[in-house]
Image (cartoon, rainbow, N blue to C red):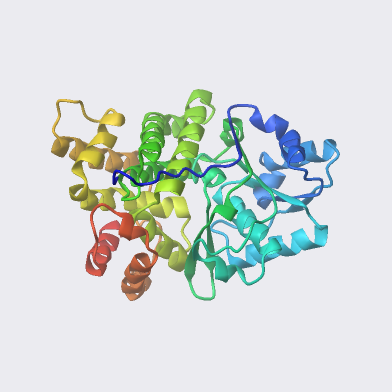
Length: 389
């Protein structure tokens, strides 16, 4: 950082982390003056997961609750518009998002669309939301996206096959309630995908050109927690120590990347989701080893620090050795967690070959690769996609 550079850290007004914190959800909602909340979630979480009991807890506290549960993985404009219609019909004065990144991103976009003029597409990019939205409480049920503490929302425009990334302070939740007990029922495959997604957030935040001393601390602690506990959380779902560490790691990593930015992995991930509708966490996870191998030359001391923080190398090991061990661990992690390649995820080869050049250009146009420590050309990104296939 330059000597006089300003360090900024944007977080929710209140951040509560720990087992049982969701028990007090009605109090957190009421403190914001919300009396008619709209709960945004998905149908599975409402019918069979932790969202249903939380809705009943809110109703038992005397709040006039309405529910919008039609959110799909990697949410679309249709999901946002559906939530917006529900907000208006209910005359809601606040939003409670319960779920993974998809319900939280949908709630963020609908919240600001409710109070601002224009189309949601107008908010794509950096700092394009004119004013604040309805007050938002975010309750994650996966240890993955970190969306509860980010000022980011990613929404798919299916008409254009584009994933729109929005970054704006007005997208930040007022209150985030990160209760690891809500993640215990998360299936193994989803735990794997979102767990490696969290690790991606931590690594990219640390090596980002926008990293600061504050985001460094958050990112390194997140990498240590996730690296030490992810396999346990997948293999032993009811291991509360592992689940607690993963939730804390995911939240810290979300705070890190929201303030330091993501980089090349995320830039390449979004076009995969737009064209092939793979889950965001899976797209990041399958790209992470190849992109890290490509990028280590741009900041070997930073990647080596991540490796040492994850106990993959010692202080006497060279940076080159540490970087190699980091890449090897990321490859081993994907093998152990059965994270597939693009071909293993049933991405059609002919379709892939037709759009790979467009995906590479879309990745560059997103801006995220500009924060990568190792610059990448369009041709290099195409080659990285081919390696991931």
